[in-house]
Length: 485
Image (cartoon, rainbow, N blue to C red; front, side, top):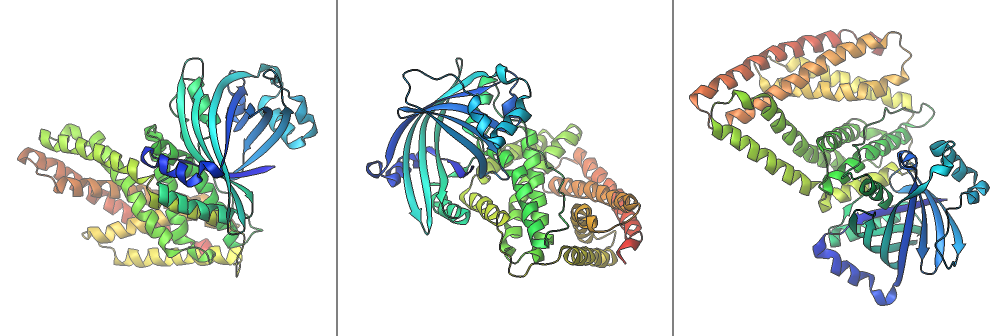
């Protein structure tokens, strides 16, 4: 069985209003007390699996959950243990009748089934109501309570929307309305994940990293695009959740930035692959990822230039700007506009309807040829003394660096590595140039002491060096692309 649900955190100021909207008189109230099991080294958690026994009213239910293809889909196996006078022992024999459940446990535990033990408990008061929306039934559950171990406890105050019958698109559209009305923010962390962190005395799970995308030559261009966006959302949302919950480490911020950059480039460069892609998506992502890039540039300057600045005011202002940028980012990741955008992209990633499916090879070839043409035109217009033209050339290189390994999988080319190496050289020069240009622009906006002018001079000189490298590497790449002809 596949469970489809979305979970949101509720700002304290909107909790009373949301409870009124559920109307307790029309809702069911149920007390849920659960026990979660795992091995001492968290083998189930490492495989994205949760195993619990929960007292639901007067009945005990044993549940096995596992991660699905997206953050709104999960495998779920429930077994009613009935009304019992005492808390039941964990019963793994019930999975002998479920091949999928048994396979999940075998893969995670191997021969360590006897090592499962109680790790943490939850005590939740749930207000539950099924709401009809369009032709879809949605179970809305407001959970208030706590997750606890013998040594720690964490408050729970969240709302879940579970699809009982109907379409995922209706579930997401319904969620849109509640997000806007109650300023909800999307949280893909489960109670099991938070409980495991509590039990192991940690604040946050490790950052989620990108996975290499495997293009499917048998599928249409549009279907591949949906799969690529789905994979990028799998990369983005756990890191965004950590930032929203104010427990993120630097790696979460870095990975969220990379995921946003990849999403932006995907929707910008491959927008013609699917008729449902909205032009506004790339524009929204560009503005969003700019805030991450701004923080990254400030931190880079603090790490590389702060020691050279003689004026203490300049260094102090840089520190203040970083703190402000972090605060702004923390609010931005859970803003109503961006939560809406996450849901829009989730809807798109799960779409199956295509009015006019495009053949993959033709679409990929067209996209790659267009990018080469734009890059060549920009190269012809670029002047080493014109910083704006160099910036545009850097952007074109970054775009091609992202799309090249995806698009070239359709070619049967020997020694494709030499083309990749030429592009890598150009991209590295573009990265260095853009970083130096951003630092120089920031420094020029500050009030420098006379003794600090050498920093700006040094940046400008380095900028010119990498500008020349960028031009040379780009030219080398453009003449190496014989396989495209």
